[in-house]
Amino acid sequence: MTLEQLRIFVAVAERRHFTQAAQDLCLTQSAVSAAIATLERNLAQPLFDRIGRRVELTRAGLVLLTEARAILRRADDAVRRLAELSDLLSGDLCLFGSNTVANYWLPPFMHRFRIDHPGVAVSLTIGNTEQALSAIQASATDLALVEGTVTDPSLIIGSVPGDRLVLVVGRNHPWFGQPRIDLESLVTTPWVSRELGSGTRRLFEDCLRRHGVDPDSLPAPLVLPSGEAIKRAVSAGAGAAVLSDRIVVHEIALGLLHAIPTPCPPRPFHLLHHPARHISRAAAAFAALVMKPIAPAIGHSKPGMVE
Image (tube, rainbow, N blue to C red; front, top):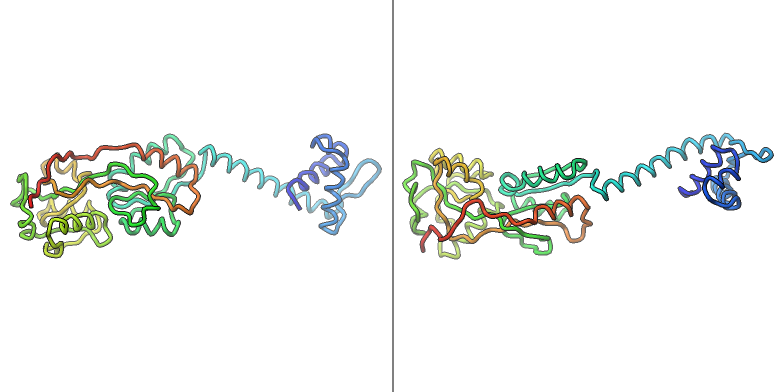
C-alpha cells in the first residue's frame, strides 16, 4: 500500500467515478483502475461495488476511506513540517554550554537567533567542559560550546576568540591594587578553585606547571562549581582565584575585585558537533551566527605574574 494508491482511492471514493478521478489526478483511467485493483488484491477485499458507470464504497471501502484520509493528512503535515524546518520556520535546537560560555557569552547569541528565527525552540543545558564533551559524544545535544582544551579535534567545527584568565582578589586581600605577583607568592594565600573537569581549572593548572609551579602546592580549601559562586566568595574575603575575565568585568568596574593578569595564554571558545551526526539547518544557522569573532572582555598587554 503506497501513499499514491491511497490518494487515488480517496479521489475515486469522493467522486464515485473512475474517469472523473483520473481527470482530476491527471492520470489515465487505466492507471487509476490498476491502482484500485492492486489495493483490493493486497487487502483481499473489494473496496467498490461497480454500479453502471458509477461506483459505491463497500463496507471495507468505508473503513479504508476514513483511515486513508487520516494517513494522507499526516503525510501532508510531515511534508509541511519538514519544509518549515528547511526554512527555519519551526524546529528545535539543543545547545550545551560550559559554565563560562553559557553564563557570560552565549545568551546574546541565543537572543539574536530567536529574533531571526522565532519559530525555532532553543534549549540550553549548562555543565562543565567534560560534561559538554560527553553530551556531544553521546549525541545528546546538537551543538556544544566550551572554553579550553578539547582532546578530540574532530569534534571542533569552529573557534572564536574567547577570554583570558585573570587572578582576582577582594578589597581586603593584601594583593588588592598590586599590578604583579611573584609566582613564589602564590602559595602564601588560600585559593578558591573550580571543580575537577572545569576547563578553567585545567588551563590554570597547565599554565602553572609550564612555569614550574605545582598546582597541588596552592592551598585550596574551597572548591566551588561555578564562577559566580567563586567571585562572591573572593569578594567576601575567602582568598584568591583565577577566573575568566568575562566573569568579573562588572565587579572590577565597581571596585569590588581587583584583577591581576596571568601568564596563561588567551583561551578560544570552541563550537563542537559530532562529525558522524547530521547537522540540522537550525544548528548550521546558529553555528554561522556565533562564528563571528568577539574580542575578550579585558585587554592584556603584559603578564602580571613574574617568574
